[in-house]
Image (cartoon, rainbow, N blue to C red; front, top):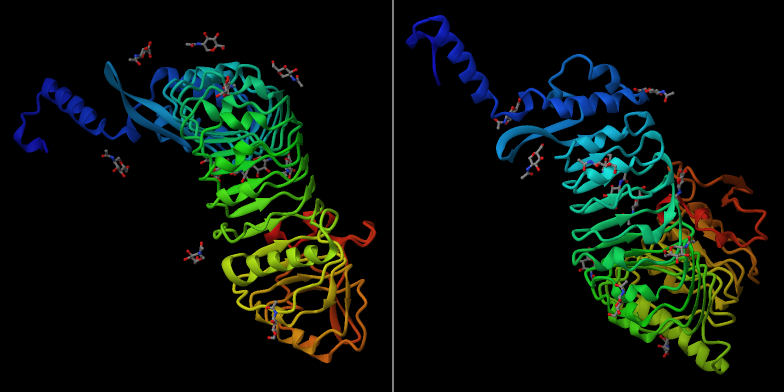
Length: 478
Ligand SMILES: *[C@@H]1O[C@H](CO)[C@@H](O)[C@H](O)[C@H]1NC(C)=O
Ligand SMILES: *[C@@H]1O[C@H](CO)[C@@H](O)[C@H](O)[C@H]1NC(C)=O
Ligand SMILES: *[C@@H]1O[C@H](CO)[C@@H](O)[C@H](O)[C@H]1NC(C)=O
Ligand SMILES: *[C@@H]1O[C@H](CO)[C@@H](O)[C@H](O)[C@H]1NC(C)=O
Ligand SMILES: *[C@@H]1O[C@H](CO)[C@@H](O)[C@H](O)[C@H]1NC(C)=O
Ligand SMILES: *[C@@H]1O[C@H](CO)[C@@H](O)[C@H](O)[C@H]1NC(C)=O
Ligand SMILES: *[C@@H]1O[C@H](CO)[C@@H](O)[C@H](O)[C@H]1NC(C)=O
Ligand SMILES: *[C@@H]1O[C@H](CO)[C@@H](O)[C@H](O)[C@H]1NC(C)=O
Ligand SMILES: *[C@@H]1O[C@H](CO)[C@@H](O)[C@H](O)[C@H]1NC(C)=O
Ligand SMILES: *[C@@H]1O[C@H](CO)[C@@H](O)[C@H](O)[C@H]1NC(C)=O
Ligand SMILES: *[C@@H]1O[C@H](CO)[C@@H](O)[C@H](O)[C@H]1NC(C)=O
Ligand SMILES: *[C@@H]1O[C@H](CO)[C@@H](O)[C@H](O)[C@H]1NC(C)=O
C-alpha cells in the first residue's frame, strides 16, 4: 500500500496518488461510478414508476452501482468497464410501466421484478438483452401481447413471467438454446403446445404452462428434451390421449395435467417413469384401469387421480375389479411406496371392497377415498398410518361402527365419514384426538357439538362432494 509519508507532497504526485487510489479501489465494482448509459437507462426506468421506495433512494447519488437492487460487475469488452449486470427488485411495491430503457442495460444477466404491481406491456426492447440469463417478471399485472419482446433472449436460462395477464400465441415463444426453466403459468396464452420451447435446449428441466388457454393435443411433446424433470400442463383445454413418448422422459419427477380434457387409458408404460414423485391427473376423462405399476414408481409421493373414470369395473368382471382394487392398495400402500404422503382417489373404483389387511403406512398424511362407493368396514390398518392428518371416506357404502381406536390417531385433524351406512354410537374416544381442535389449522371451522369437535363441510353448495375442488383441502396439500 502506498503511504503519504514516503511521497513528497507535490501537486502532481498528489493527483497521481488520487488516480492511483481511485483505480485500485475501482477494482471493487461496488464503488465504481456508473456507466453513463446504464445510469440513464436506470433513471428512465425509475422515472416510469409511480410508486416504490427506490424512486427517492436512487436520487441521492449518481453512483448507480451502489443503488439498492443494482449489481455491477467488471465486464471485459475490449476495455474493462463496470457495468450493471443485475437488477433485483422483487416485492418493492413497484407500480407503473416497465421502461423500454431497460433494453439498454446490454450487459444485464439477471432481472427480477417479480411480486410488484407493474402494469402495461412488455417493451419490445427487452429483446435486446442478449446476455440475460434470468428473467423473473412473475406476479405483476402485466398485460398485452408478448409480441417479439422475448425472442432475442438468446442466453436465457430461467424465464418466469407467470401470474400476469400476458397474451400471445404460444407459437411466438421458443428457440431459447440454453433454456432450463420456462414458466408462463397463469396468463392468457392461446394456441397449441409448442415443441420448440423444450426442443431447442438440451437442458430444459422445468416447463410450467399451466393455467392458460392452450388447446390441441400433446403430440408435440415427442420433440422435447429428455432432460425434462417437471411438466405442468394443468388447467388448459388440452385434449386427446397422453402421447406414448411421454413415458420416455425417464428424468421426469413431476407430471401434472389436471383440469384438461385429456382422455384415453393410462398406459402401463407409466412404469418407465421411475423418477416420478408427483403424478396429478385429476379432472380429466381418463378411463380404463389405472395400471398397477406402482411397484416401479418407488419414489412416488403424491398421486391425485380423482374425477376421472378410472377403474376396471366396466371392462372387467366384478371380482377381478375387486382384485385390481386390492392390488392397487397393496402395492401403493403396503409394500413399495413407503414415502407416499398423499393419496387422493376420490370418485374412482366404484363399488369395490376396502381392503382389510395392511401394515407399514409410514408416511401417509392424506387419504381421500370419498365417493368411491367403497364397501366394507373402516379398516383397522388405518391405525398404523401414524402421520395421517386428513382422512376422507365420505360418500361410500361403509358399514359397521366407527371404531374407538380412531381416537388414538395423534395427527388427525380432518375426519369425514359422512354419507356412509355406519351404525352404532359415535365413540367417546373421538374427543381424545389431539390435533382435532388444533388452532394452527386456520382453514378448519371446528365446532363443538355434543362435546365432540367436528369439522364443518366448507363446500355446502357442491352437493356434498367435498373434494370437487382441491382448494377444499387444508392449504399445504393443494
Ligand atoms: C468490495 O467491497 C465490499 C464491501 O464494500 C466487499 O465485501 C468486497 O469483498 C469488495 N470486493 C473486492 C473485489 O474487493
Ligand atoms: C407504495 O410503496 C410503499 C412502499 O414503498 C408501500 O408501502 C405502499 O403501499 C405503496 N402504495 C401503493 C398505492 O401501492
Ligand atoms: C462492446 O461494447 C460496445 C458498445 O457498448 C458494443 O458495440 C460492442 O459490440 C461490444 N463488444 C463486444 C465484444 O461485446
Ligand atoms: C425473484 O425474487 C423472488 C423474491 O425474492 C424470489 O422468490 C424468486 O425466486 C426470484 N426469482 C428467481 C428466478 O430467482
Ligand atoms: C433494441 O430493440 C429495438 C426494438 O426492438 C430495436 O429497434 C433496436 O434496434 C434495438 N437496439 C439494439 C442496440 O439492438
Ligand atoms: C419463478 O419461477 C422460477 C422457476 O420456476 C422460480 O425459481 C422462482 O422462484 C419463481 N418466482 C417466484 C416469484 O415465485
Ligand atoms: C411458476 O411460478 C410460480 C410463481 O408465479 C410458482 O409458484 C410456481 O411454482 C412456478 N412453477 C414451477 C414449476 O416452478
Ligand atoms: C393467478 O394470478 C392471479 C393474479 O393475477 C392470482 O390472484 C391467482 O392466485 C393466480 N392463480 C394461480 C393458480 O396461481
Ligand atoms: C397460433 O399460431 C399458429 C401458428 O402460427 C396458428 O396456426 C394458430 O392458428 C394460432 N392459434 C391461435 C389461437 O391464434
Ligand atoms: C419433431 O420431431 C419430428 C421427428 O423427429 C420432426 O419431423 C419435426 O420436425 C419436429 N418438430 C419440431 C417442431 O421440432
Ligand atoms: C424415502 O425417503 C427417505 C427419507 O427421505 C429416503 O432416504 C429414501 O431414499 C426414500 N425412498 C425412496 C424409495 O425414494
Ligand atoms: C388377511 O389376513 C388374514 C388373517 O391375518 C389372512 O388369513 C388372509 O389370508 C389375509 N388376506 C390377504 C389377501 O392377504
